[in-house]
Image (cartoon, rainbow over all chains, first blue to last red; front, side, top):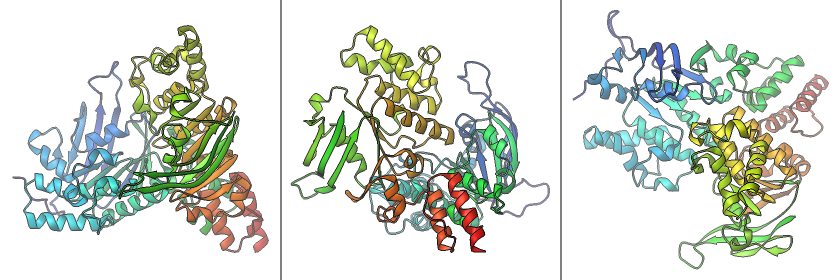
Length: 287
Length: 278
């Protein structure tokens, strides 16, 4: 069996508690030319931290997600999870249970015929005792606001509810990190807001969040933003600084949403609207 | 060309114990060159409406007609083109050209004529036919594949184009590209866009129908909608951010003298209203 999750307090020589990419390059085996999907990428994510990875389609975002939990292994460089190398086959299950991934399309991640069975599927497969599974299912559904829908059939849920169910399924494995690959891109505004609230709740609970997105409004909610362009990190910093760099964002291929353009127009008219204001509420509050 | 939907009702599983009323009393009409925007939350009946408008299923009540002639599946024959959500998943042929050619050839177009319409269709979605035609549809970016799928429908030269959530799942550039293409297609056809994303299409809509639980809660022009945006709430939709910012600004006592969808105009009015208030 696997070791229980280690305590966060470790000695100086002990493994660092973080997801760490060190000079990671990845070339898909099927690539016609030797084009790297990721090229010399280094960054880290600590527990309790929310990092947004911003980039257009084709920037290498999804490759980064697959590398983060060992679904694929770097062509060169190193990905470590709490010190464990993802190339180490012996650590594979441990790595995957510590890094939970939620993909874009929730339908592809839902396996069971009722909501609670779907959440129980992961821990059942890991041989978690029955009483403990019940607790995890209840906790996970509560964390994403789906309590009361336990016996629903997943296809009866809205898009936003399905995406939150997919997150609950991952939470039931009690991962230390959540990696989200555009979890809101198929959802309407309300669905997006609900999913993002569930994610923020997990960050406050001490989980590290790596949120891959092309929405600037998502990036505004992160502690740190990494800009990815053609497989390389082109900037990294707090949202207020990154979002102020309009030229940088444009070269990244992520456009300001209309409310961001409105904020920019107001700034040019002398109204002090903060750069991380990416919602109607925050822009109106600055007036 | 004029597409009319009169007093449309639809009940799934009619006459059974599990019957669900999906649409009730929906009326709209569309002329060539116009864009009608159908807004509604998930489950509001908007996809059902689109299927009915495409002639894929007859309404339980009411009438669908093109130029006064009742529309049914056997006689649609390429006059109405439907672009589904995530249309790129429907690409199947070995080359982009062959994929786009499939529809018109099925309608009985000659090879020569079909080849011409394929070029036109690819150009209309901003893809160079010489560059993209010979490529595999599976080697395209998400946004490019999306546009190829739209070209596949355009190649049939429909008079009415129906789009189901045309920008879902696209990044900001893909969204801008598809929004621009949809706008330009009004030159060839009447266009209906069904979406929950009011932001992208509201500015170009000639008429707007807003659905809640299958019933129209608003039918009218963009100006009428701006005069009273409260129907967004009735339809369970969030007000687009630029409009919402203006509503919140007025709640804070900043007089704007009416709402606008134009970002620059909205900023002008807010800056002015703010100055006047102090």
